[in-house]
Image 1 (cartoon, rainbow, N blue to C red):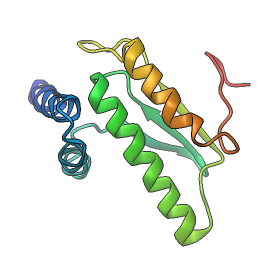
Image 2 (cartoon, helix red, strand yellow):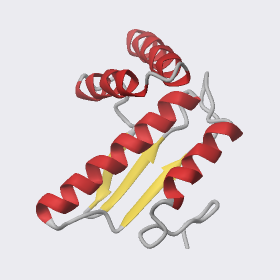
Image 3 (cartoon, one colour):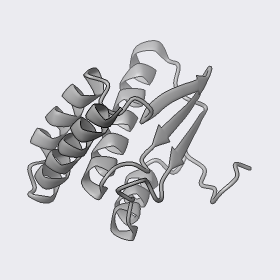
Length: 128
């Protein structure tokens, strides 16, 4: 368990640094490899058919932004390929054990989501 957390901490720091340095494509590449290697096993989960959970609470600002943008891009590709996409996506933010999604990254997350006004409905806390 500690080994996984150490790897996650290192990957998180690298992605956050790359993102904050303006090297977004490099940050995306590191995130893609981390996702394939299951570094963030609970970050993106299908809870049931067409219902997904994106859990950002153990990530730094930069990693949470990259995770959300890459996951939404993946959902879009799947929708274009199959015509089937999520009907519901829960996005968990807030405090993690060592990291937290701060107000600045929440603003970036809201900006990402504002580009999809016809698709997403916002709630604070319990789903409506």
